[in-house]
Image (cartoon, rainbow, N blue to C red; front, side, top):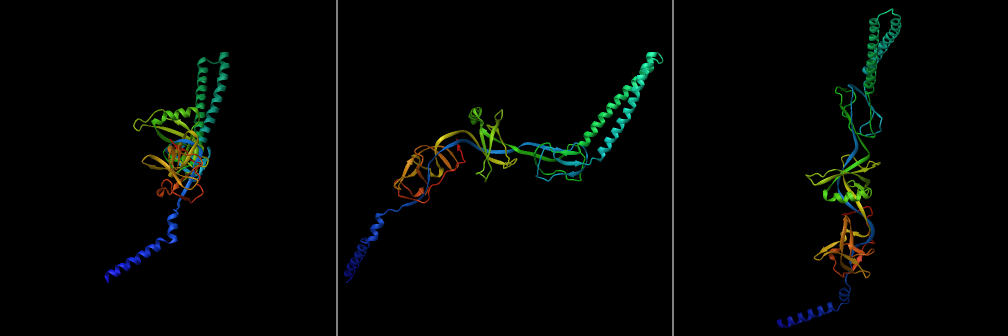
Length: 379
């Protein structure tokens, strides 16, 4: 009985297996390989800037500490903190009344002494004629002459005092010496400024503006060689605003290498009309040395690395992929120059490579991905 059950169960199981294996759907599944979804980009031929990249610091074109030159009450402030000012704009007023009074006093002294000098001059002329006639002695004439010369010196001193008083009065009007942007007020209106040379506010000239940065001394000879041939373009990229780099040019290479760091200071000038660069701000700097023309460029994420080196998956016309070795050139962030192994127009896989092998069938999920046009290549 037991033997019969075993035979029956085996017979039924065989029929089930045979039925499944003969099912039409089973043959179709094994006969049609699945296409793997991938994202691709087209290899493009571009003129690529060859750049040195580093970190830089924005510096004001000029910085002026606005200071007092006279003592007194700070009676007026004519600007708001942070506003833009022009050269000659009135910024502060020191109470000018004491200086006006002092000026009037010196002017009165000048008028008095001038009148006395003119009388002494007339006396000298009169006594000069009397001396010629023998009416007065030479000693009497010399006394009048000496008095006139002393009064003349007094008048000159009075004139100098008046000029100085006018200067002191003028110093009560504190004006901007440059075009720039005002900082924080250090002394508020109504305070008494007791110390001459007190800093009232700082003005930074931001149009134009400098960006300073350091490069390894090994780069110096090549930078100088290119700079001797043409102006070198410098881009300053503000963090979180990489699509709007500021354009400037290299204007300064320091005359010595920092021996403790092995670096050299460089400075670039930017027009900065939109004030996208701000003093003491950190920026990414790209110094363009030259242009690599007609370079084949692909997204860096297309590049894979294996035991034999770098390779990419190239999509062929039959929608299978070829694992192709490539030689890498310069690179910058998201793009890399391919010096050997690719032609312009070929499609490379940029997403989905982990599931691929040479000859895999693929389905392209996107059209093509254009490459960024605003970046250069790192050396």
